[in-house]
Amino acid sequence: METWDAIRARRNVRSYEQRPIPGSDLDRVLEAGWRAPSANNRQHWDFVVSTDREQLTALSTVWQHAGHVATSAATIVLVLPVPEDERTGLIDQYDLGQATMAMALAATDLGIGSGHAAIGDQEACRRILGVPTSHECAYLLALGYPADRPLTPISHPARRPFDEVVHRAHW
Image (cartoon, rainbow, N blue to C red; front, side, top):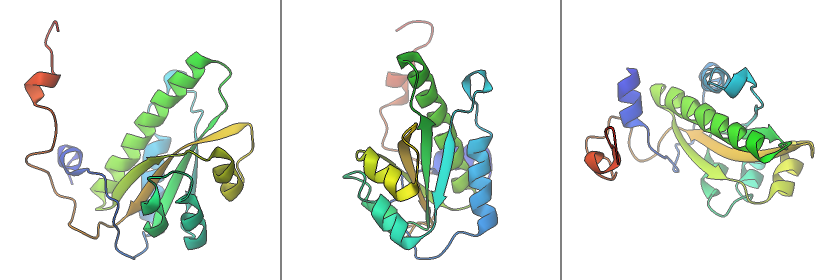
């Protein structure tokens, strides 16, 4: 798939076929996150990937809107060190956004859907994955083949009008 088509086809997928993702495809998605831009190339992130059904079911309980994680083929948990100050925390969050989008686009390119979720129960997430208290589980990115329809470019996305969002030279 061309990059532009992947951008237009990417959508949040929360209903998955029950088939595994080949390891090479999962590694490609993870490598996309690994290659994402990072402020000063700090790369403060770690990615914990799970394909274990019991672990995925447990992870689906760490946020009220993460039920789709239980039926995903794999879920990547994006982890950051506890920030030393507010600015570092903000920059790290921005970096994670870039890593998440890179992984979501790489997944789309492979026909794999993704659905992100926050983490509300930090202690449960750390316990499930063995993440040390020096780090925070930041976000979940569930992956799987879409159960409803394939990933194809969306002609008319549900978005605010382009001309309402884009301002040229001034507000």
